[in-house]
Length: 155
Image (cartoon, rainbow, N blue to C red; front, side, top):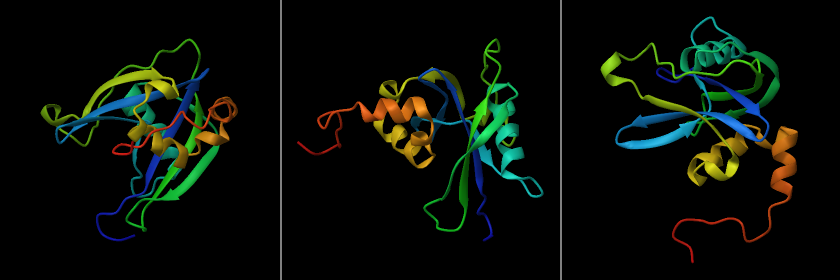
């Protein structure tokens, strides 16, 4: 892999029709992402996904199945997404990024969100991550009408 390029592994954790999303604040903007991060040397994508879930949401999960493997825009590094289950009686908590010092933490929140509550910019990444391979979201998206989408800048 090219210098500085790292694969990413992430978890899609669902409760009903809600997804566990990590809120980040970086370079003056807020965004929501699935729990995940870089795959470390000697680590499998599966191990990385579960480690990242533990770091960012302070919860242990179990991989149910892979959802997607896609290339990042650099065309070299990849993103691996896994459907992950956590116990129903466990509520995730805001964790941290151990690679960053406390004053530079980008993780500012953790929430369960339905698709309609996720900003469209952030929702777009979920489709590449295999959202349509999760039955509840597949069925939901099939109910959308033709007028239920928008693109910034278009009238």
